[in-house]
Image (cartoon, rainbow, N blue to C red; front, side, top):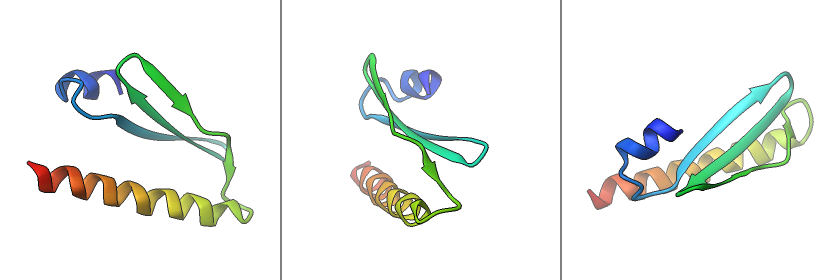
Length: 68
């Protein structure tokens, strides 16, 4: 994420996701601050939240691409 931030010249937040076992974590890095979500469990109803987060992230990325 730090490399992406440098390449991006700190213009936009950097979004990420990582998985630890059954837990999914989402994060955002803006300037020198970051935030990590609470864990989502893909084997429960959290799977719908995971899907929703990815749909919103897709919209954010599409809007950033359109601006270029």
